[in-house]
Length: 277
Image 1 (cartoon, one colour):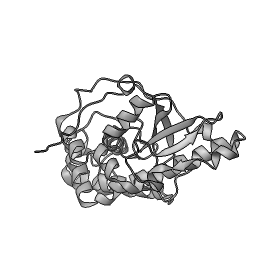
Image 2 (tube, one colour):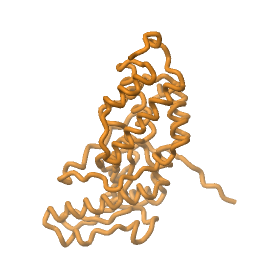
Image 3 (cartoon, helix red, strand yellow):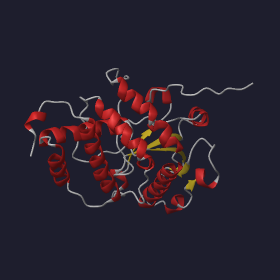
Image 4 (cartoon, helix red, strand yellow):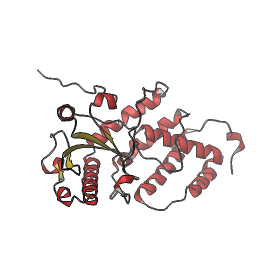
């Protein structure tokens, strides 16, 4: 039963902590494939904190919006809404600080669409930086930096590369080029990093394709690192080199490709400095 005295008031920290914890309980169930019923969670939460159904659903969508900025998956059905109450950032910060394992989640076996053609999607359009992002959210993104997090998460990176190797072999086999499918190599796994690409594949004519795989559980717009070696090889072999941006990996992997010159495809920003004596 909703508490009429709370209608139109700001949520207290204990209420925000409750809904954030409940949201992540549903998200973890969703990612692991365990059944859950959103309406039951909402009903139990409403009884616990005295907020209306509309208020609870709207706050769920706020949480989805923050997770999208953090390069994390969010619960289907709770489409992100970005007119936040700033206190939600602190509640999510408190939760993730105590439960950091969810930031490194790697699905044991991501669902594979029936056809490779279902996986490839259009590259998102370039957009200018959004200056309207609240500063508390910017701080939260800096703390749980999705770019650095994905880069350090070798389990996620390897899972994405293995997914692409399998996909390339499936596509070539489907095109009647089993001979080329057998030649697809997981270069990063067999030879180590540093080649400037992760997977050696081929088109149906036998031309080499040098695929650099960038994997995230976040959305298509989640940023990523590009190394000096990768950029150099993109310049040296622009006809052959491609980025495969694997996104939504935990829920249902999708890929868009990026071709050189990179400066025309993405907004490149220097991120670190190399210091020497």
